[in-house]
Image (cartoon, rainbow over all chains, first blue to last red; front, top):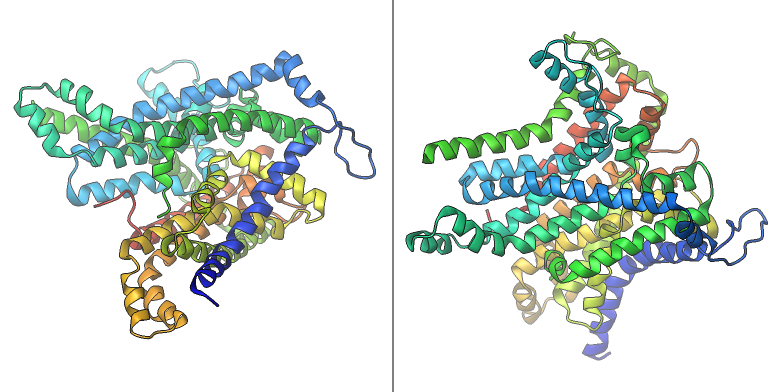
Amino acid sequence: MNLARRRRLAVFGLTAPAYLWLVLTIFLPLSAMLFFSFLTQAPFGGRQAELTLGQYGAFLDKAFYRTLAWRSLELGVYVTLGCVAIGYPAALALAKHVKGRWREALFLLIVLPFWSNALVRTFSWTMVLRGDGLVDRAVQAVFPGAPSFALLFTYPAIVIGLVHAFVPYMILTCYISLQAIDDSLIEAARSLGASAWAVFRRIILPLSIPGLCAGVVLIFVPAIGSFMEPRILGGPAGIMLGTVIEDQFTMVFNWPLGAALSFILLAIVLAILALAYPLLRRSLQVA
Amino acid sequence: MRRGWAWAINGYLAAVLGFLYLPIAVMMVMAFNQSSLYELPVRFDTVWFEALARNDRLLRASLNSVLLALANTVVATVLGTMAALAFARYRFRGRALLQLLLFPPITIPWLIIGTSMLVLFFWIGIGRGLHAMLLGHVALSLPYVIVVVAARLKSFGPALEEAAATLGASPWQTFWRVSAPVMAPGVVAAALFAFAVSFDQFVISYFLAAPGVSTLPVEIYSAIRKGFTPEINAVSTIIILVSMGIMLLVARFYRFGGER
């Protein structure tokens, strides 16, 4: 056996199991879903399904679904803006202000909750935001006699929960590009008379744009596809594209409609990812 | 002026940490509160943990979660490490494409992936249940394992392996005596990662759960939707401590966020 052939065999043998697995669990299911989205009904139990564009037609015809898609996008924008507003300054402080072991410890503390159960963290907000919860009590303590103040099952509650879920992502991606900025660049600008604001606007911000964009994409995409957070924190105010898709598969059992709505969501997601791919590629470089 | 700034910055970071940990802290305190209506002041009691120990549904779901996470760890770590070896040690055609294919499992919302799996698995007869969840969890873990292990392999380069081969070691010997020990920290970190991914996974499990066969997050979700029960606080407290403990272990083996 010659060397080239042995190398090819080795590469094939090493990669084939992982990629066969991904084909079976990611790419085939997505194809099946695409097929289902063109059916009149799910072809189970001997029912006859015909090909149709009707599921997508429903999306175009009924204002309800378009409003849903719009609501989900809007939610994504609010959540992303919240994460930028909270996360970017924190990343900047961490990268350029905190030093040594403190930075290490703080960094770990910030990413730690990100890797714990999202469902549990969402649930924990219900105890803070409900009437007579922590926020309500704080308000009552500051303004005695104020009307009961319950944020739970309102739109802001969903935004708070999702910002809490995703802000470590923003801090992580911004921190990585901010700490790569050479301090001597900043010192040079300062010694030449640039104000702190000018340094930020002309050096720090432009050089951290890749991290900022990566964070924005990595947050916006899951935020528009969220269903569990709107369900738990939003109650009736939490009807989003994601929750309606969930209903189609778990309550209504209209799988073709659910599939079509999923693909509309996926099309939005893929458009965003395609736009951001040049920026994202570096953060997922394998070797 | 400068000192004022330093205080403001430290205060800001403290506030961000407060925001991140406040709800978790409230939940943990409530897990030890005697009142089922979250009444204050807190009266310390372990009654909810005792109730948890008698809750067969939650216990069975916990066992499922742990078994699933263990199986996922083994499969994802083995398959992922193999693929990472190919990426780190060989230049081959289609390499860029294979790297690109790692994106979908982690960038497409889980809602879409989960429902797609439900559709296909139901359609071709794989069905729902723990085996279907295992298929899904491994798919989500693979990209993380591959990236983490490949990063480790890249950091020491093929020089050691080439030296071993030149000195007459067989490929098998080279792997077990040279490559394996050097990449071990990366593999351990990846395995812990895979465990955490599976143990915390809710969305995929939710759509692939069969009646009577579920995992802890799925049980918690249905309990939350039926109405709040303080036992959920107790089990959630345990879950948070377990996953944070695992991530602290990962941090021992793998460095987050570049140079320190």
